[in-house]
Image 1: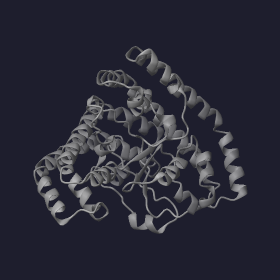
Image 2: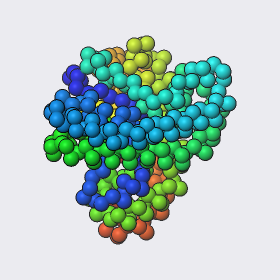
Image 3: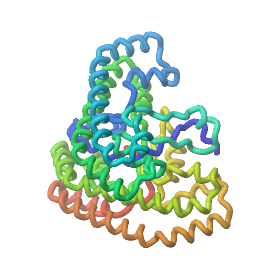
Image 4: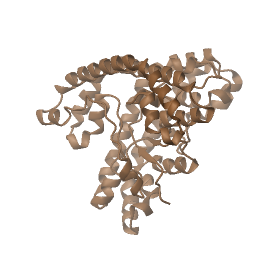
Length: 382
């Protein structure tokens, strides 16, 4: 099957459980957390997909006029964000070598590497990386930078003072995007609103095995009948667990990278290039109203370990029987480490669920008792 309709991004897993999102009225669907990483304004994003949305000349003019009222706010937000990124860069710079600092000097700029033309011409998902903080960008480029284990540890420690600032920055950007979208939505038809929402959100598929209990409760909030008070309390209870989940995800990413590095010797240079970003736990599909085929394809990249991920795309990758056998043998040497990771994830989720049980009704507790288990098949976020 040729994938000519979709442009894929595999970024680092970013968990955003903003209290504002949970506290909103249940009948008012807000935008997904991914809008916190939107580089463009809503108007700019809609202009880029205007033909697909069928925007009329009058609608385009009204959208530009509405954006004009938000322009100064976007300017202020970008200036504040640039200062935050530069401050983070300064703090991390002391950990890097002069050569490494030279390579990351432009990381304080927000850019999306969109290779859409190439994606439309290839029968293979086109991967790029969208990372929100300097720390994520440096860690993501760790292999090419030659970061040592000690440097990675120091970088995580140095980022700690910026964690709350980055969370607040993402929330402010998210609030601004939602406010502009709400204003612009009044100029759109219901169908255009739906398509615009899809275009702005950059809908994603996440590896459910990496999800926290709070995330799973969020995804099932409506079916569980969680009220606003319960949602806010769940967010509050999750906060002390956030750093523990982040640490586990960092360890998991490193484990996937180690397995990929070991498997790399079995692959050709061309194959290695195609799978270089497979050590991620989220796939973002940029498309207006992607159909179920897009989600199915995305899920294939989110198996638990590297060997399984490569097996799902083995035919497209051109793996030989000998390569497949060697990949399975290499994975065997990592099997115990993945088993240990699973045990740690389950234990952490059980601890988090125990802390959240007093918030839930007995009927709700019965429905979520299996939320501590791994869910290897990733489902589309609702």
